Length: 349
Length: 241
Image 1 (cartoon, each protein chain N blue to C red):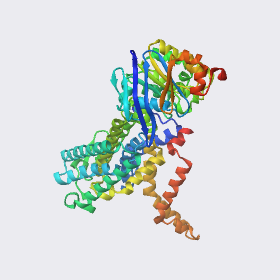
Image 2: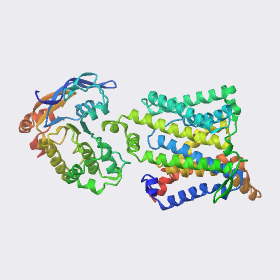
Image 3: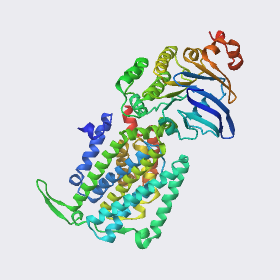
Image 4: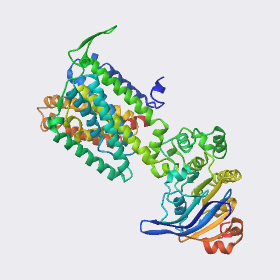
């Protein structure tokens, strides 16, 4: 049963299995375990980023394509659902219509970028995606009457999902709309991740890995690499659009800083590398570690700075404002000691 | 040639500013093994890569089973029925032996009887079936590369220096495998520096020098002609005996 769910791709390490079970159980029980808003927001963000990072791993880790347009697709999903709910009212139909439009737009853009650019060398493809993503971010900021510009848009979500909604479930009791929204995000993320595992472990996924290793060899076996690369580009874009839609639904806000920013693109890249490229499970580990560090490292450093205030220099180094510096140091150390990522290292034993 | 499966007529190939193939003409008879011989840098591997479409011919005609394939995309040439074993072995190191074989079986799941037939020649592949191809030795990678090309019956197989750096015991197994393929009516075009290996299997010999075909005759005749071997290849069977 578990083997079938994981498409035969088991974690292949006891420690990794334990970590994954712990993360899954914590995320599944998050609304019961953590009553505070920050903790539940962190859990929801992890769910969203697992989908986003897994989709980027499909592109980078499994197909060997470096793209900087992933946040553009993430933003498309966020803006699609957000603007639909803002303009057409907080109904399920609006949300679904927004998601459908964003998916079509994302797939069409990914197809065009893939078709025109994947024939060129990797570096030129990366440059093209960077240019398209920058143009999209500028467009989203400039069309302020439609997108809300730099401020973005806040919107209402369907009634069932609102924080003040309360419904009675048999055997469970009353639960809030916020909890329902969390489980919509959690279960959607879980289904998307299992879907991504199925893709990379299918014959299609094997061809992607062959192309990553050597596209000429794959062509000599009769595989049209442009078709497979474009398909991978479209699949990854579709997943990123979906992640953006989930993010929008959870935060009830969409804006350039939360979806289209280049800083998010760098975060995704770091999460894939730290977790382990081409492993899929790396997306879970990378996203969890990074987002927990992003949300709690500052607090931890604040406490450490306070406890060492009698010492020279140390409190300054541990000041919460230096959290990005320490995150950078952690990244350099993890790449140095775990070049195959945490998952790769754990699988090696 | 009346019953040629593949013909090259006046084929030129440029790689960047270099003019590598300068009007290559030869035919590969159906159901036999043709051996492409020549010194290093003569253009043998480029000829195979040009047939596979990995380099585009700048001039000339390549005909396979009556169809002009010069300029076709590589996947279309492979799908037309040409298998290719590159000089660099070309296995996918991160995929298992099994996955490498499944990738090469384009018509569906590999045929169990044919797999057993292949394991008969290359038993190491069965032993390492679920291991990543990257952990195989050089000889085992070469076995896998050849096994991938023969996992399905293909009218023509191009093989680039299969014996390079390979242990004699494995070479004997390769000879047996290629011999059986020939008997099964598969046509083989082999680039080879090991003259003993070429002589054991080859029916026809084509010698290249400086991007052109400089000599054609039967393998048996070339093997018996020490003077020609020395003149064209810089070797003789006696010297290598």
